[in-house]
Amino acid sequence: MRVELKGLAHRFPGTDVLFENLDYTIEPGVTVAVCGPSGCGKSTLLLILAGWEKPYRGTVVRDGVKRIGWVFQNPYGVAERTALDHVAFPLLAKGMRRREAEPEALRAMDLFDLSYAADRRFSDLSGGEAQRLMLARAVCSRPDMLLVDEPTAQLGIPEPHIP
Ligand SMILES: Nc1ncnc2c1ncn2[C@@H]1O[C@H](COP(=O)(O)OP(=O)(O)OP(=O)(O)O)[C@@H](O)[C@H]1O
Ligand SMILES: [Mg+2]
Image (cartoon, rainbow, N blue to C red; front, side, top):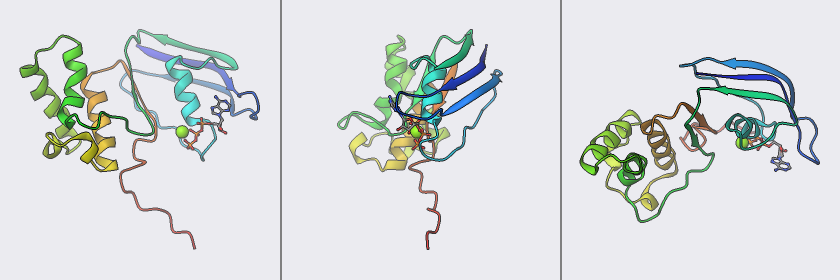
């Protein structure tokens, strides 16, 4: 399993070139962080990696990557459903029984220190809890490649001091 980027470049109609000459191979088991200022093309690069956006130039070869997981920049959930339900759902959709899916979902929530909120409704979660929930859900469904957009945006990291 690997993802190979060759000569990747992108621009949208109406934007400058966001990035170009991007050659990179993502090996199995590796975490790659993409950093850059707002609007530089980080989310766009993830869309291209997932195959949801066609690059302006260059290619992405996804070798052996069948299931792609996404954690979006903003957490989306179903207001009335419990946190646990959100994590268990992909397992149930894969055919697992609820009595196996829920303990596994709880273990994934535990990885993100979230098991205390298992029975809370999604609408009652804080922004950071909702984001950790989305991470737990993504990890729990064991995708071949996990794309996480701004994974700490809501996690209460102190704002830079602006005088
Ligand atoms: N479908 C589109 N059509 C035209 N322009 C777009 C489109 N999608 C994104 N853009 C523009 O492309 C640039 C890169 O957007 P992108 O969402 O990739 O930035 P980002 O690095 O993820 O920013 P942020 O840190 O704010 O999330 C932005 O200037 C954005 O306005
Ligand atoms: Mg973005």
